[in-house]
Length: 183
Image 1: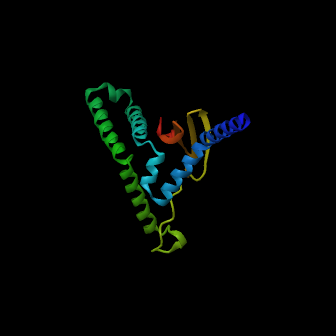
Image 2: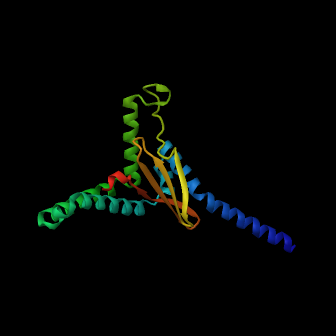
Image 3: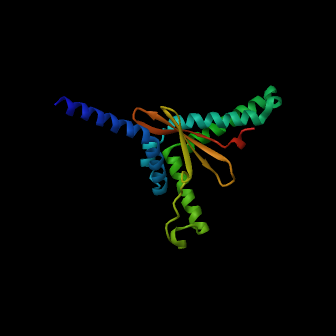
């Protein structure tokens, strides 16, 4: 009887371990499927929108400050302009990085694809070809609770998606924008 209990415990531990190891890949697949199906409800399962908003705002604000340079920041007018721009871009990130914002982006993508003829089968009235932003990603573990998936954009720049483990679940918490955005 003890052997069965030990075997059961080992199998359960292996199953949980396999799920944790495969978790980032399952999350990437879930995000890809949700985007292809244009299902923002399903997307919420795999994306931590509050954390993503905070991280993207920080990157955009850093970019603005770097672009403004020290001369602009040292003057009172320049500091006010940088502050106002930071607030405007922060509001833009807050608006877009929500399930409703993502749905609007996907809807715009759908309309654009239909207008340009990028549809399934080439039929103007057919459904738009599905978006596949995570199609050619390669991933790696950076720690037990952080996984990055890198994809190469058409212009050669790289976009890095950061997934973080929250309990047994993996969720998208950051998108590191291309390095050419950063001076």
